[in-house]
Image 1 (tube, rainbow, N blue to C red):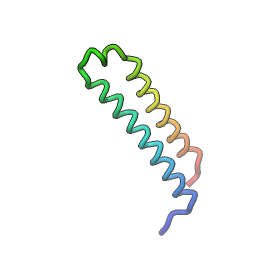
Image 2 (cartoon, rainbow, N blue to C red):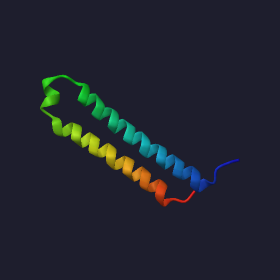
Image 3 (tube, one colour):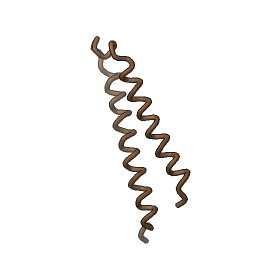
Length: 69
């Protein structure tokens, strides 16, 4: 059984948003793991990545809620 075009497009958009979320989360995790003085001087950078990841994830979840399948 094949997916209807609307469902395929929704899945592609969700996958794109999920990939953005994962990349931002991984970047934040990498910054957390760095044990250099440089990382300690940029705590807001980690927060920005975390907030970006959270925003993208919320957008993806809203897309799923708003689009009937």
